[in-house]
Amino acid sequence: MKTKHYLRAAGLLLLFISFHTAFALSGGNIMGQVKDPQTKKPVADAAITIEGTSFNKVVYTNDSGLYDAGNVPAGVYTVGVSYQGHTALVSEVKLSNDDVREVNLEVAAAIELKDIEISITKTIYDIPLIDKWNTTRVTVTGTTLKQEGITKVEDALETFGGGTTKIGNDYYVRGARAGSLSYYVDECKIMGSPDIPLCGLATFTSYNGFIPAKYGDTNAGVVVIETRSYFTER
Image (cartoon, rainbow, N blue to C red):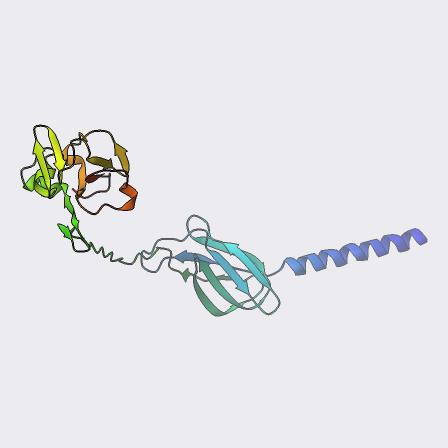
């Protein structure tokens, strides 16, 4: 007798579970395609949101821009699409059980490139031939030396070395003895006169009177040469 009661209870339980499962699985489908409004091409991997009062679901489009949201309970839903910050919504989508609703959406997929205007201002600094604060300093560029017909750096002393006299192969600054002229190339003191081609010369500066303290170990004049770098305008 007890066995019959157990069997009857088990049968009722299975019937209840089957009914509840069938009810839970009942619903409709919302499906469609997502395209770009400009190119009309399908948009893949776009997020589709199905939002209702008590049911929400998210699916994604495939490579053809198609999506299919199944087992959606009967109700009224808002269907939205989101892709790379762009969104679109369709409201008041009514769905009944076993109903199939097609909701096609459009969302921008192409990246909009705006024109960028680049403005470059080039400032050219002219080097004065004579420094008004130090009249014993003369600075010229390599281009100026070329225009003057000078072929060797050391020969620039005769033209721009004020107070410099050449006797034989030696230069005398304001009566000082030969060999008392000091040369600095890129802030490094060198022995003898520099053998630098004019094409590698950026600026040539000669001091033949007042000499800055950093060149204080010289007895006469100083020649300071700066060479061109890779970025120096030619």
